[in-house]
Length: 618
View 1 (cartoon, helix red, strand yellow):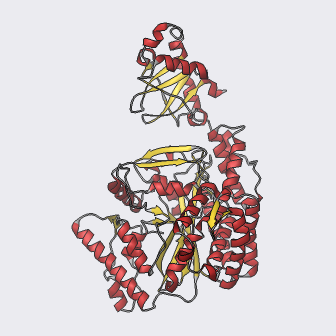
View 2 (cartoon, helix red, strand yellow; view 1 turned 180 degrees about the vertical axis):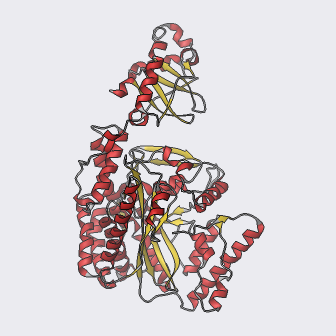
View 3 (spheres, one colour; view 1 turned 135 degrees about the vertical axis):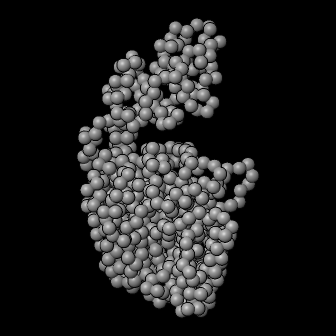
């Protein structure tokens, strides 16, 4: 949870004050490391649960601020969008039944949040990317009205000086542009925290990097965005691009994305790691600091907050993020695992975290110097292979290419058992949650279930209906508590579509063929013939709708020689009647009847997003 009271890093005086604090924080951290003040006694674990709020029609809500106000619990905080919230779990000593204790608190908090959400006719959904998110849910109207988000958004836009570009290709493809960071709000995760020994920082952090691919492969739960099948964990690509401050250029750009895996193994101390982050990533925001700086606090025998360093660190998003914090006045370092997705159940989330922690503690001596045993590029390649292919990935490991299931079952799962035993975790707890992982390896994970279920739903339903049904099913099954490996690829739950008058977006076709004003009329007519099209939207060079071509407009000339000398502009109907995607289907039907037309281009602003015909009502 980042600092909410932030302000722009503007003006010479503000920048001088901020950077003085930042450099002082680094100096203070170096002193604490040298003097052995960083806690290395009892290690702790913690977690942050991000979740989605949906309406009773299973679409993104706008009620997060109101729900949060009624929750009145400091464990909860806001997120970027009006349809996301976050629950922060209490840190626990890594021993005994800590994982089942965390699970109990997580269930208790989510059940309470669900009871409050229901009063606003909302529900909670645990998923990496909410299936029903559409482009209309990424407007500024859906941004949480908090200063932190507006300030960060403005700072990133100022640095980038261009729209955010999202290009992801999997089975399907998305190619989107936006003028804000709202795509970040599509992502929800279960962020696991593990305290580490500062004396072994580099080796421990590198091991966390090395195992990221295999751990992610069994945990993927975000295979789709806006009804498109993309990566098994699409969050990895989407989050990377949503807050990218780099601009597209013809020049070779060596700067890293703010969300990333890194470029090399870590070396040196934790202070050295933070220094490199400051060098690589520009500071974006500031805040009003306390009177005493970090060095003065140290001299007074106090534990400093390192506010400026944490503020900078909160705007850089490596998938394994090093964090500094204080617990009961004692400073500590921890690794925040940011690549684990939310859901599909709390049992799956706790199992994912336990697998990660167990492998972190179960590392054999032969793998203690991972930087000397494995090429960093192989670790990075493993991570992105896992994001793209999930359990279908193959990994570079110990000089071999090993399938994900084989590597997990034969190497990492036994290692996790040993690591948890070494950490003093209750054996029954370990068996309970690691059995969830084993069952998932032998069956399916969240992303595999979601893709197969959606494909089945699409046999009988159009895309918007199928996505709502899928979201309804995610909600119902999550609160039953059965891990995803036990889920069947069917959705028998009752989606409340019958309670809702259909909208244009529910019926329209989105995969549409268009013509350009300068296209050959003969070619366009041929395309209409070949595909049995009765209507074809016409766009200008800026892809704005300028006309609509119907078969009635071209039928008389379609077989005549003059078709080769006729322009589209001479045949199309200029300024066609259009409708918005959120209009009711009944309004669209009445509009067609009133004007004696059989099709309506659907616009969002001046952008064509679909077409609705009389056939879509049947």
